[in-house]
Each structure stands twice: as C-alpha cells, then as structure tokens.
Amino acid sequence: MALVGTPDRAHLWLISRTAALPTDIVKNYLAVAKSQGFDLDELITPRQSGQIVPDAAFAD
Image (cartoon, rainbow, N blue to C red):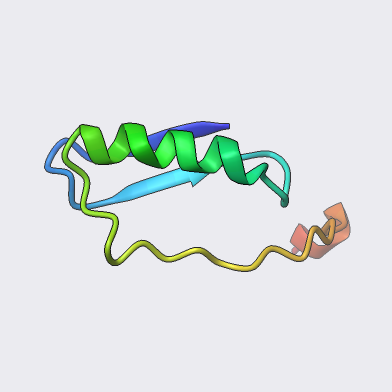
C-alpha cells in the first residue's frame, strides 16, 4: 500500500495491490495525509470488485 500525493496537495491516491483494505490502516494513512495539508473533504473512494482481468483483455 502507498499514499501518493502531488506537491501542491491538490491530488491524493491511496493505492494497493488488493481490493480490500483494512479500515484502521486506511484511517492511519489518511490521518498522515491530513497532517501534511491534504484536504480530505472531497476524497473519492471507489468500490473495488476484486475481479482479475485476464491478460487477453489487453491484447490488440
């Protein structure tokens, strides 16, 4: 898992290789982001299906 943001604090991503993230860990990461000046009021949390896309889906 990684927390990635832009220097101007306009964009923030919490990225992971897994679809489900432990709530307590997410809260800790977001607390760090907030302490560094990121505005979390408009944070979008997409729903992840966990579906694995086969390699053939990327073939030409």
